[in-house]
Image (tube, each protein chain N blue to C red):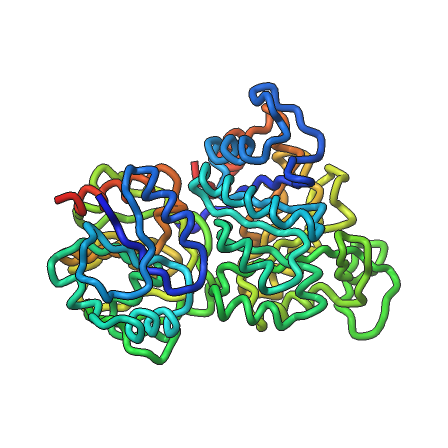
Amino acid sequence: MKLAIFDYGAGNIFSLKIALEKQGSTVDVITNFDNANSYSGLILPGVGNFDPAIRSIRDYSSMSFQDYVKDKTPVLGICLGMEMFFEKSEEGKEKGLAALEGEVVLLPNKFKIPHMGWNNLRIKKSSPLLEGVQDSSWVYFVHSYRVKTKNFDVIVADSDYGIEVPAVINKGNLYGTQFHPEKSGKVGSLMIKNFLRECKK
Amino acid sequence: MTLTKRIIPCLDVANGRVVKGLNFESIKDAGDPVLLAEKYGNEGADELVFLDITASQEQRETIRSLVSKVAQVIDIPFTVGGGVKTLQHARDILLSGADKVAINTGAVKNPQILTELMELFGKQCVVLTIDAKRNYNISKGKNIFSDGSKSFWFEVFIYGGKKETGLDAIDWAKKAQELGAGEILLTSIDKDGTKDGYDLILTKAIVESVNIPVIASGGCGEPKHMLDVFKNTNVDAALAASIFHYETHSVDRVKEFLKENSIDVRL
């Protein structure tokens, strides 16, 4: 099975690649959506800035993200990758990928920003991504923005940082985590394994 | 529940080997940073910090290959620092597999590097290291503190604690946050190596001056010192090196002790 990680050109995608390879997947790092989608799954990684990342997807590809994943290829957006699924973000001026309704807003500044460290998940509903994951599991967050959506159906789990932080989202073939599964120990590996199982289907 | 306090083992690396008194019976090659990283990860460390204490130009390749080897065996966040002076050097470290890069002298000499790093990689990758020392020579414009008998201010030191800068640590922390630092690794030079506890005055002062996470470092000789720094300040993480070198103070036991004393930790 072959997966693609989209590289926006900045940051560490090495540990994500290693995490996928440990689960027996082959990984290509791609920088555009030019070729027909030949991958079992796509990952939008979580390091970088909103505008440059959106531009790297939009400006260097002949195909749009929406067309690329139309065939129901599972997509996992991690942190920034998940934020890009939505319509816009306070981090930048560019339009988001708008695959999901809602926007991304800065965390209130009465809290330390970034929200950095291990916090636990409050699982609200079932999702293939969380199969076997216990409620209250610890995962590693490092982010300054959070998703704000009226469509609560897509929120599978959240986390308490004095304010509710949507932590896992899922709609159809789109999966997103505000935290970093590749940095979240055994629980994170389980989620990556779950995602790969969806890619195999 | 909410965000937990982080416990961070630190490995000082010289010439690709871990230095400082090591006493692991379970690991044959105690000086191998990769084995130690894996061990700490398995024991429940919340994060790892690697400081290259040689930090010479020639060692750069060694460190890069070491960083990628460590990144392969752990699944927790990983910060690398020591001698980072240029954007290119920081980039090399991040692209080798580190999640964050820690920078001290490089940022004091060229504060703009914090902004450049933040714009390229996001502020979550940018850790400002502050090595601070009490200066009893009170001068105008400094933030003055007192331990009850003497007054002092906290001065920033660079080049591994060897050179003073005249910079006030509180002012520098605030400025670094504005420029793009996402976290502060705060080491007390006075306390480092003493094993008699963190500098609570310094830690509290920095934590209350910024809105980004702070890691306390320097002086931890027993688990109680971690408890003290978490009880007395709103610091986010405690870093220690030598305390974890003995099986009696393994990471998981330290965290159990903290939990028994009502500190939120990941267990």
